[in-house]
Image (cartoon, rainbow, N blue to C red; front, side, top):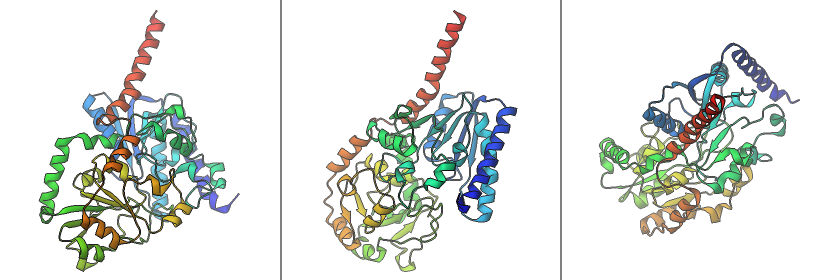
Length: 400
């Protein structure tokens, strides 16, 4: 046993003990729905839209929210341990337990019968590898770690955007395909709500009036490494070069991954062109006002393709990233937009303005089985209405 695994084992023992005690003392609350995440300190993304759907139906549920961002320091780890102990109680007593990412307590317990543990994975589609698909990569979990923590285990339901990606999620979560349902991704419902998008657009131009006569570029790179906090960022986008070439027509906004949001510094002389936007808008709202997306390996491309607007890929470290993590598809042929290694060439493409959207359309149709804005509805119907009908049938059988 590696010495490095000992703290993890101690935490595992504590979580299992708390959970087991709660199972003995407390019954499952059939009306309790818990939303849990360490990606954010607030209700957002897929969890927000599922909660919204439940509220709209006026079900008599008790809602619990346990959100806390993980900080990779000693104090942060101790604080998060107490948070996980609290989460273990809610995991033991909830009828429905929703998560949108890796969530440690789920993987070290034996779930009690009657609890639905639902994974609403934060990424749409299948792009860069994750979970068990990364074993053998520097990004992935070690075999020694997997001996003691069965990551991504114990999910009862997983929801994805299309049938095509089910095998990849089954591999990543090490689970049966029959428990992965292509009913859609809740947060993408937003892109089919014209009224909400118009409200956001109006707010945006009020907050940033200088953008009214400009097109918006959104730069949204993924994070590198496997830590929850990326301490340094290599910015592959040369902002001064981009500014010199396209600032007469475009304004640049930068949105970073949740694990790296606070680490980008824009040179003072470029602040009239580039704006680092952190918490003012959700990523869905930002995409609404974006004319062109620039990214590298981020699954944000799946969300943005719903708007049928141009996407460019800036990935000068492709081989390094492929070796570190890899992809479910051949990267170069998979992309729904041009690939660049140099900002100057990318800027020339922007200036030319000849965007071919045919690839975007094919990409969208390939990775979304439903294009109607009702993903949240389908998921809740699957989880709750279907289950209630089944219980009614059982009850009828007993009464008979």
